[in-house]
Length: 128
Figure: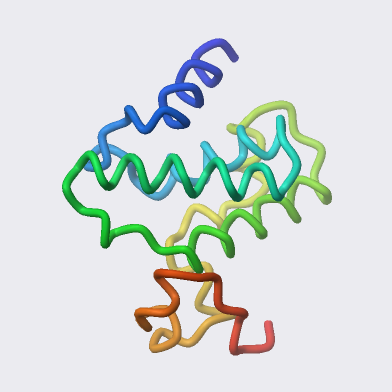
């Protein structure tokens, strides 16, 4: 628990190494934030943290608003549906979210590769 709080604090400050921040860690930080904050506050703080992290890595173009908000939405919805004590339990209950391609059921690939999808949140273009 203390380690999760410390990791979350470093994430919020943008101090985590973007090169050592795989998809699972994106989900974990989203999970930890959503357990502590409401969705709107999480979306703002999480997006800001990611932007800071990729800017420090010299890759500001790596930030993707649609993917960020879509995954946060999925995590938030799952948290309403599953009673879990920690991220390990959440991961076991939601293994599909550990796959970066999880958004494919809601988004066509060409929609996610649009420049606009990086800058702002685009609604899904597929029915799940």
